[in-house]
Length: 483
Image 1 (cartoon, rainbow, N blue to C red):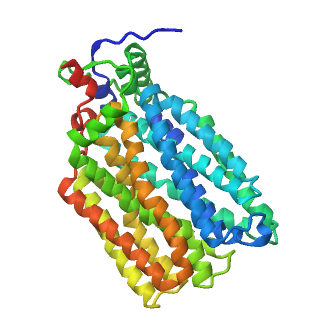
Image 2 (image 1 turned 120 degrees about the vertical axis):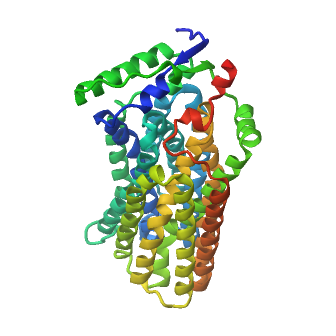
Image 3 (image 1 turned 90 degrees about the horizontal axis):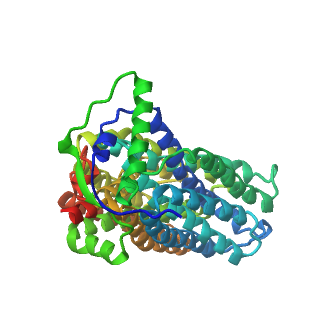
């Protein structure tokens, strides 16, 4: 067993990584890490689209409508717990170890879900599946932001987070066929849906094995020689690809840090609350708003269509496809403006704009103006903007806190914001569906209010992080130790 010697060093690794031109190596990072959001979108959509089927006696589970909402809440609760546990481990033991472990947990749990024969087994499996996905959020977002050049960080981060909706679209189309009783028995189709999710996860795991550890994490934790070697290999690969030597990095771009083994919970909390109180409020606001809206709507949308608007079970999942496309196109098309126009303007516009559009949709829905087609059309427009805002929440909390606490910061805000908005939302909407359209409209208005409030917080407390190195946005704790 080797012993790592911790010391004070100077390194140019952050500047060397940020000055790299976009290359095939960056696409490896995107494909290996970013594709996990497809799995999360698939999971959420499968349960939402299969919600009505799972309430049928011949499904093998026979859940009630309220239990479908409860299962959604349990999945989110697992994600919150997983994000905190694995987030801390990610900051301590490295990005790569944890984004392999968390994906492995997801694979095992989602396979086990396919073999559920009682509600309790189903709930436990959903909790563990959520724990794997929650841990992924912390490990993946921190790794991506530390590997992608600063000038492209916003656009890439939003596009990757937006890939969640590719999983949603895939899940919606998949469930249309799996819900067809002419093709699959009621107790078989939904089980196959979870099994296919595991197959996709296995493919991602094979690609992910080739993604390296974050050099920024390595030099902080006493592995500076390994980090120098890794960055040198990346630079050599890119120079061979482009045929052009990379620009040298000046001595003035070096940072001096005191290496550390780990960062404790107390220091993490102290850093966020006492040193960055405004950023703490900002992160919490952004997460609560988007988590309530998305988890409430998407875990129960199929039930709204089937129970309240009379849409057949095998047709309802199709409505999620255009909504998913709108969600994916929002971050993809608007992402580059987060790097050019800036974070504060784009984040506040996305949140406030989607909140206003949602309030209008709620009013029209309550007034009986919208049928299933037009309600879906309204959601496409609402979520085009909301999706860009929701993706930027992960980008924001990943950028605005020190490197040593990055994964734990993502985990904390995800857990707290999602816990408040994501658990309450599905359970509340599961009950509101039983009370009819007016009650659901009130729930939509609550979501609109939270989104608008979060957008206003961004206006006043937003951080102008566009195109800036991570170390400039928030000085690493190890750099303070060296000083």
